[in-house]
Length: 335
Ligand code: NAD
Ligand code: IPM
Ligand code: MN
Image (cartoon, rainbow, N blue to C red; front, side):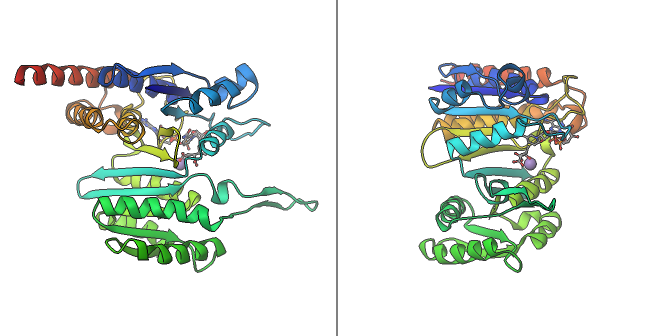
């Protein structure tokens, strides 16, 4: 099995270093290789997603991405975020699963990842008007909705489809398709929520949600809201899946220019993303569970600054590796 590591920029590289150690410790037989994406790739090759990086990803069994972006928003011809969009699109990983867990909160946002407002036509007219468009074909909506239904069926059986059907034509299509597909999933209870109401309900009663399925932009925004309610961006992981081919696994957070280079970023989101890679990408649920358990035990005693502690990125990563080793020795002793 081959896994591609794409550290990327800022804290992306710092957290992927720890995630790589955790992967090596829990699944030593997995072969890894590292490739440039984002600013580093632009500096080296002039493009955010070099052909060699994409080829390595396509030939792999799973891709772990840190984060890309400078955070200065002065876009040049090739900006780092474009590399990530190109990768998501090339792998056609349309279903972005973002689980959130804390106390009574246990929900998953399924964010459509390769369409909608992010990928519609955009441009500038002669009079200076600038436009972005949101477009969806029915089959693009159906495939991500089905992921939502299937996930809900394996969980608590409740799916909330989030849209803005009182305004947007794409949202009306979304709502129509969700209602139609519900007939195939009689064991799942479907409801619809407008996105503004969904944002409020997330803050007021996050425990009332099981699975949320929604458009790309809505999912981006709602997932940061959910992250804020469930431990912050330092712990929020994600899996982006298509129908075939490798999945893309990445923390929800970005390159965090405000703390980059200081070695204090929380690697938990990246390490949880490795667990998601093991479960969804490599079909190795036992190792995924071991890694999750090790992470939970470490988190109980060791915290990075975002969680109110003073541990460094590497200290947390090393502690996870040590916990995995202790577990393995315990299992041997028990056997
Ligand atoms: P961000 O997620 O990088 O940071 C938001 C806040 O959360 C910051 O205060 C940061 O310090 C904190 N934070 C994030 N991750 C953390 C971690 N692991 N540990 C501790 N604190 C953490 O969002 P931003 O500042 O708006 O964006 C910075 C850059 O990252 C932009 O260029 C953006 O486009 C990019 N970005 C990339 C990805 C990605 O590659 N998947 C995702 C989000 C943002
Ligand atoms: C995310 C990020 C990206 C997105 C940015 C960096 C373009 O915020 O993965 O959530 O909006 O998809
Ligand atoms: Mn985001």
